[in-house]
Length: 222
Image (cartoon, rainbow, N blue to C red):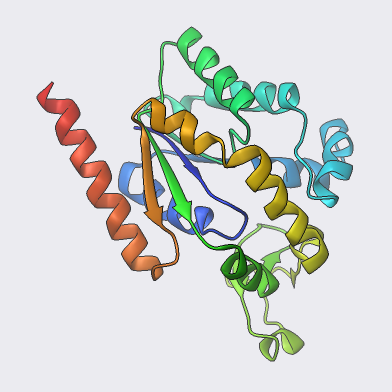
C-alpha cells in the first residue's frame, strides 16, 4: 500500500508509522528524520534547511519534492511506502500526485490523526529525542530532571529546538494554515481516513488497521 499519515506536530504519526511498517513491511519515509540526518551530517542540504526547521517553518516545496522523489525510487519502496511529514501543503500534494503518476503509482489512503491544540502542546512539552537515532520518548517534568539514555542505542536524550514551547505554538499555527487544507483535498479524492488521534495508542492502531483492511478488501472486490 502507498500511504500518507499526517497530523499536527505531536499527533502520533511516528508511533503509528512504526506499527504500519511491521504490518505491511514497507518503509516509513519521514521527511523530518531525513532533514535532521542531513543537518547532523553537515551536508549542503542540512545547511539549507537548518533555519527553516529551527523556526518551525516549512521547507521550500521544490526542495521537498526532490527529496521525496529520490527516496521513492529506492528498491525498498517498490512495494509500498508510508509518507510521514509530506505533503504539508496542497501545492505539495498536487506535485506528489503528478510525480506518482509519472512513476505509475498512486496514493491508496491518507490517514489523518486529529488532535486538539492543547493536547498537542502538552505532548510536545514532554517529548525528548535521541541525538543519534531520533527515537522519541515522553517524560514528565519531574522525570526530565534526570533523563536516561536511549534504549535503542544508548544515545543522549534531548529536547529538539523545534519542540520548545515558543516554537511548538508556531509549528501548530503553520500546520493549521498550510496543512489542514489537505483534509479537504484528500477528502475530495475519497482517500481520507479521519481518526481520533487522542485515543490511547493501541486504540488508534486498531482503528487504522480496521480501516485499511476494509480498503484492501474493497479494492480486491473491484
